[in-house]
Image (tube, rainbow, N blue to C red; front, side, top):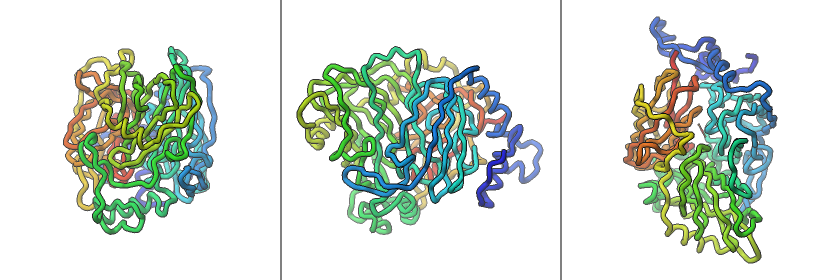
Length: 509
Ligand code: C2O
Ligand code: CU
């Protein structure tokens, strides 16, 4: 491999282990002490990774090429013009659309002043294309580029974002839609909606927010950008009954749907009676969104790209990183698809325009939506064709979520991120993860490279790659260890993740 390694003595050693691994790297500890019995990791450079890719690819598969330029620039949010970082100058970045089984080839060009990577959120792709610095690839230095190439195995609504620091909380995100050529359809048009919480370019940036949180502990949040040292000082922390406690650590000045604030929304032209498939993505750093069209129920069809038994709902909660597909029948009026920043008093919308007339006032519409019941996503049953076969787990891993202490340290099983101290699994195992949330805040827990199945109310819950674990709650998820590699697992609150709430699901030979 001729990719240049950026400087950094600590990282280089691990990177060396990760990348030089032919048959797999040994655990750091074993390597350092020279113990013979050290378990052998299946690393991103292992031949097993290309074998698995070969099994996924098809002769004559179509390839789809794209160029992704991460770049500083100005965007117009509606309520404000901000300077930020985006893919290609657009917010969200331009959607990438492929079909299941395609070979996706993307050249990332890093025009940012920081190193970056791209992570393809939700895809069970080859481990060396997963975009996690140190663990699966070297960071891509400013001015450098990197070629991602992988077979896209499953249809669904996905997205991509950097996996370096808190870059995700700038404008670096875009949808990745994978179509299923065999899918029945049953809708007239599609609307992809990306929800986001926004602060970059409004007097502070995500790096400064993280620095403030780390320096001041909980309550480092602020609204002014001037008070990052003053604790919550009289201001109330975001709280939500639905989220069972704290609704976030950061209050944002803007909330966006497809890059726009509620007062200058995107609109979609529709006709009464049409069926519209909504593909909804929460790209936020620290905000869950309550989503719905007041007065209209939607039929939820997919969670994180995978089919569920179609279920009707009036409102649904989307944690950071989660996606929901739903079909709505357009009523005979102009209606908003609302995203309400849960516990944070923020509103955003896309207006569905089926006739003349003005959209209803967003605040009034929000009040109506807040009165409606919210469906429990973790209890939706997976559709039969995508449900895991019943099987007892071969291994059960406790995943205890802790923090913040001291200051702003978030932990998994009592420790902050250490790529050499992951949860061991072996190919072929059925693995159960038992998430126990000991904190007072919700955590959307995300596993790379796999789509687990939540053990819901009736046993068979939804297939997901990101699931909310509420405060004081324990949930169990199962997955088949069928995609060897080193896979990050973390809280998709980008500040929690950076403050330590990450670990690795680590395949051993
Ligand atoms: Cu969407 Cu590890 O992330
Ligand atoms: Cu968290």
